[in-house]
Image (cartoon, rainbow, N blue to C red; front, side, top):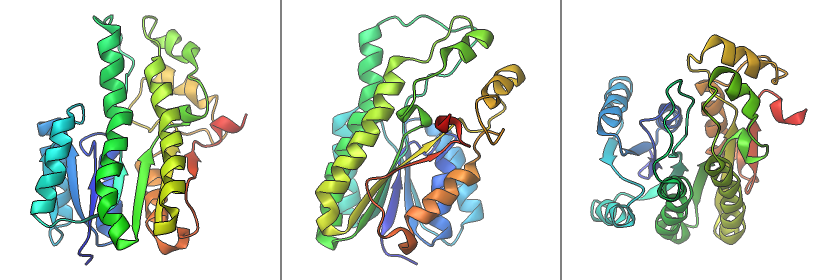
Length: 259
């Protein structure tokens, strides 16, 4: 089992467990974080039950708080936990709601979403790459979306959720994630640190039937993505088989963005 650890942010979310399982199945111990303590504990319990021989550390972490991020880094250093695999998964994803409420303060919401979805990636890479640079080895995976290369189709949302529109923040963040990926891939290539990005389409998660059917009309493979689709790409990116791949945005969308 590797003496190095993988770090996953937003581990309590839908996709977080797929990242965790990918690393654990490759015998990599992990640190999982989330701001939601209840969701974090739930994922932790599931993982410990399935991977009881692995070391799994959980941390409640608010990525909107710079000091918390810095303290988290210091705490892991004190425990001599070296992060060699960093998966930046956390993001605020505005989802459709039939009772969608109007934002009280647009500026505050903008800052919150960009801090979590973009600034935290920058901070975490800057901090944890220090060990990777010394090792001359490391893997960074950033989670984006098919909306990193296309704009949201607002008509799909309107038909089911008349008061909802996918916010500009989400597109700005996901396009920015791709930019950060390319930046660090170029910056750290000399130290054998690979930085890539995964951009899935919507994950199948019990969406309303009408909304799902409208979305499937745009996808040539006629299905939404699954957690296994994402886990398989993570497995590839942490494997030596992808050792010549860096700075790439891997789009797994069933062909949605090609037409």
